[in-house]
Image: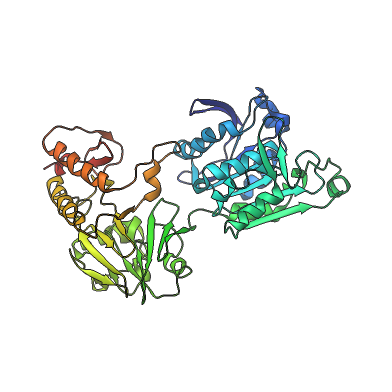
Length: 492
């Protein structure tokens, strides 16, 4: 193991990092291990040499079967993990950019105080964690409901005298929570159906393992079924859903791609398919009993990877030249031009009692559209308002501005003035990393985007170099709530 420093959000931690033997081009899981009170301090050797459980994941036998990174930070003496949760959350975003870590297979586990830290991290950034194993810890029972989509297998001994298995617990360092039994019940009541709980009976730890009842980690980390279960989980095929209002569901995949399911009387409409490895059509069918059709906001792979699952689908045929790019990345997508039901400005998709109106906002792609649902007061914007204009086939900024002005005029009409703006990457409106400000798509952002276009065209705004480009230098620029990545060839 090597020692690294974790710094962010005004906090600092030493951490031990174990790196597996990495093959070129391969990505590996990461296990974040949070120790208990016995290992706190400023000597990292206490964590690497004495923390129970780390050796399970660094052992040659486990590494041969499941090569993985193991990160074990050390908590300062007299403190809990709670003040460092934001730092740990940011670390889970940062490390995959520095090491060959599979961002979809990040696992969190911890014991006692570290079990509490595991529950707290689940609450803070559930969208980043593939699965978790909290052991003999405690949790904030209502806050932990945020992890309703995260697979969890928890452990505790019923006769644990240090952290009670149930009821309220006040830790020596000031944290307050409830024992594992109640935390698991809270998570299940929030809708999580991949929650497992092993509660060891009174006397079991002493009789079977010869350890104090608080040391339930001794048995937990030797539970082969639980360890294999955790390593079988991945965010790549996970979908998360919530009802925004009766008749409208919001669906998110691992890539922060946002899809929406809108129900009418006769059928339902899935807006975009995301980039996940699962089956978004099958998932949508778990949310509605109606037949499901597809409408695509634009022909980029993170919005139409799974269009081939539908016999026909709605999309602007102006985007057909982009279809081969999707199929280069995903050959299983065999969609053809004949399957595309062309949509243009003012067209209506009738779901029976609910009409979805099409508005063209070409810019990000030639055929980019937004969908307006006045029944549910929703505007599904795809990538029309928080966009990359450095991508292949992006239109001139002047054309994009004119399309925005036409949309702005439509939205000023009666019946269009109280819409919720629902974007194609809704989670990113809160920032790519924890702690970044939430800037929702809105009428205000539409106005600011028009102003930003005008400033770029007038030479009154200049962008900073942006690392993601497609053969031509890219620049990022912002104005109030609007932001854009562009290339000089579209600045006309």
